[in-house]
Image (cartoon, one colour):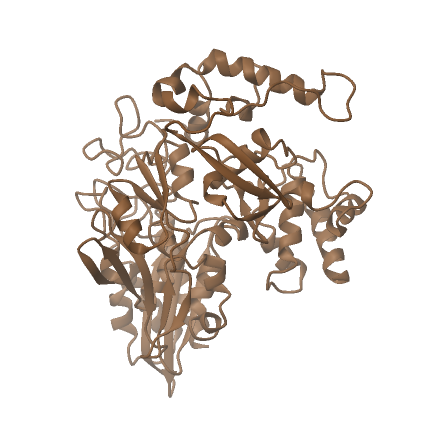
Length: 329
Length: 240
């Protein structure tokens, strides 16, 4: 690991002033891991653990404001989250391990990086190493014809097929969260759907943050009255494993028909994958397995599977159908 | 194209020095090694631990070249020297006692610092990537992976290791239950398992064995003592 300058910031202003080409560190569960692998080589670290961003507060509009430093376990176990945003609690508790959830923060989870084994290879993107356009643009993508059983089928490009690993973000996509960020130029808000980027020709650009910008809060809108929400995660082990496919559904049923529906998928996309197609197909339809299957078909219609991850297409469809059944039962 | 297994383990090989002493344990090429000394209460200076530490120091000299090139400022000052680029001073409160560490490499993880500087070797290094749980300690009463945190980030935190939980003759109930139920074979993962098990007693998880299994998922046991570990945790929960 390369050495680095280390400073502790006590205010957001000081953190922004200290960033200077380095990185912010909070829980460290992704960053320290990747520094050990030489994937991340920051010249400096700004420790933001002392910033006053560790609260969960009710918003005047009936929503919830989550501080960027709220630990994943605290968010998952917060009574209001468990009651009104069950999908978020379930998603977080289905990810990582209890130790990691105690460390990992809301902001850090948003910025979690892919588990693609080529991306995590220390020499990837260097001469003699595996090609990785995320590590070094222009060096190719070893996963395309390599070991890609875990890789994405939606939002891929010929430059990158790395899966977005987060469960929390899939729930936030379905809940239509908003990300609040602050930089030296000021504050701005980013709709959740616009926060993460598909790889396209620039897989090294993973989100909408400008250099030196800090995630400060995530806002959840007021819960939809009468709705239910569910997260279902399918994986190789019963716990402590990344998703092969997952689904987050927020649904409201009245008179046997779907009056409100949000569908997002994990484990299959290069970003947390909201399916507007599935939602459009389900609106005002009767609660019915055939309609759920139709929605799953359109949700995966644009899938581009490769040799070893083709199974994910059918798995994701069944995951969506099952989650819709659970949310509307 | 590489085989999947080859791919999976390649990064481990590349972190090993090119020509390591064959006896070198994975955690013996860390930068902060204690001077060779007798373990308290042991007559011989050739205890297993001091013998291995000696090998580590030798191995460091033989294999340090690439590290020195990468970060000369940090590596040249392995002893207790205050200041210098890449080093810092931190006071860690561990098991109720303050330890002021000067010249601490800024890159030293909490795990390496506990083991190599404070000599609390009950906390184990397994994967060093937050995947196995052998390094689990409590920070401010919550369990964390000490391998994924830099020690300099823990000034002012209350850290508890397995040594702070109980002592021979006065075991923590969870330690006693692990002994009673034979919750281990080789023992390497055990301190992490026990630290996790103690922490879950205060977490809002369900009452069943399935809940215990999910709550213990971050601690891997390659010997496969899981059934007995669950039995130990179940017993202590029932008594709590």
